[in-house]
Image (tube, rainbow, N blue to C red; front, top):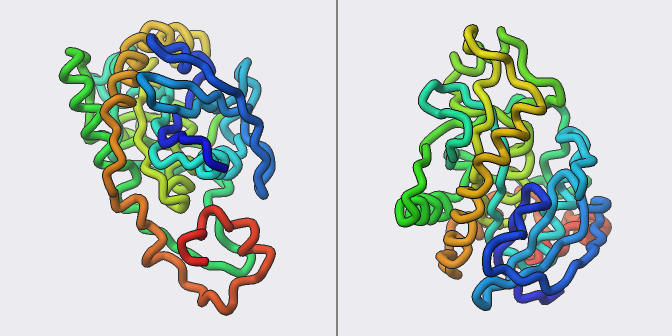
Amino acid sequence: MESGVKIGIIGGSGLYNLDGVKTIDSIEIKTPFGNPSDKYVICELSGIRVAFLSRHGVGHRILPSELNNRANIYGFKKLGVKNIIAVSAVGSLREEIAPTHLVFPSQIIDRTKGRKSTFFGNGIVAHVGFAEPFCANLINIFKEAARELNISYHSDKTYVCMEGPAFSTGAESAYHRSIGGDIIGMTAVPEAKLAREAEICYGMISISTDYDCWRGDDDAVTADMVVGNLNKGIDAAKKLLTSAILKIGDNECACRKALDTAIMTGKEFWPINAKRNLDIIISRFL
């Protein structure tokens, strides 16, 4: 599917209401892994085409554990996307990361349980490198854009991805701090892993909405608190998104060669059905 789209945005459905963005189309994509969360909204900003996907569906209908992440990432790949910017609300595990602050994480601690986190299997085995789960090139673009816009941010932080949907217990929050977590959310995994398998650069703009529940003198996080502070921080995130979109070029990146040393199964052993389902993912090797 040739769409001219090289940049994908996944987050809340209001993200495509950016200044200067014109909506062109809305595309429903079918994948071998089921249906994505919603239609992909194709927009244009200064001649650059961008595909927006509402992660939880328009109206926020899908739990983090229910997300069909494989379909979501596959859909971006089918559109020709080479860079995904994920936008996500997170809880803060550090005093200095106050509500409404922006965070560009560089590491992940995976605390999810049983989510489908690979396109492979069913006869084709692959193990991608994931030492650096977020694309360094995208993070540098976020930082450059933030500096130019005088938007404060935190970087070189570790994102703890929990299963949810309930928020952490006090003991869990303290534990996540003790193992090096700086922010906590429910969506980075397996998005980042699947993007790596799809050889798509993936970077995240996180909006701190609360202090989780590790501060004894604060109210524990609630859904209302998350939404309230997300709305306060979203304007800065939108300005940053607009600037980042204009800065992303078509430079080569190691993320786009992730499968070069990952596939262990010899091509002569690839089952026809598995090869058909992975055609877009492994097209370089066919």
